[in-house]
Image 1 (spheres, one colour):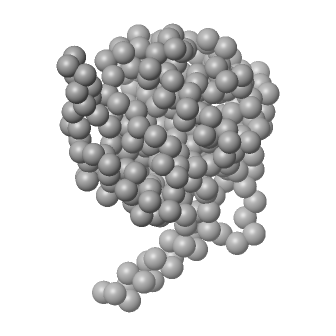
Image 2: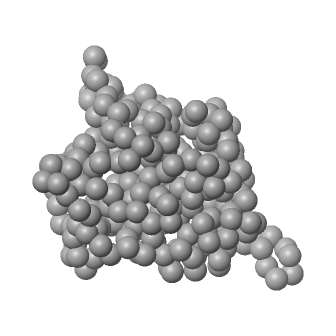
Length: 274
């Protein structure tokens, strides 16, 4: 059994880090940053869209690509239900609040389930990365789906990525998947900018912090794997409400205490990438 596991590990390494393989930058962008989580339900998409506007408030031109083929959430979170225009060869991203956006959710009815096998998913990713006309972006943020499957490997093998941010809640179950995500990025030679502790605590009306999902697990994992810890984002009613309304908090209220946390994280990312 151990020999078989070893062979499987070598096979994965060969597939994820091919020799002399050229990765293409996404046209119209300077820096491309993944927002990832190996586990679903940790607030990754909410983080991605608020990071987009935190970077914008720092003077950067930013776009957001929703790469979750099976469960695109961007149309709801930015309040857009239009279809992108096309010149027959390229799709033009939708624009709102001064940022650019693209999602498969703009191209299909929101109630239509994406019951697609791997090859169709890969084809959709190719379209989103090669046939979108981004306009002079400083940063393209890619909201990745959970897991370590076809989408992740397609990006890792085909696209030039400047760095990845891993989002997690501090509970042990989520951190098990984070460790898999770290190893995936290390194997595919994608730089991990750092880890973020999302939904890290809830502050009650009494001012006391309640660590609902545990405490310190994400920072501990970052240290264990020698990665940077970018900060904590607490549970926030304002953050949830703004996402439901399609009006991201970092755009709506840039001086909100949560928006300031995103601004601090955005600064750390800029220092690492630019």
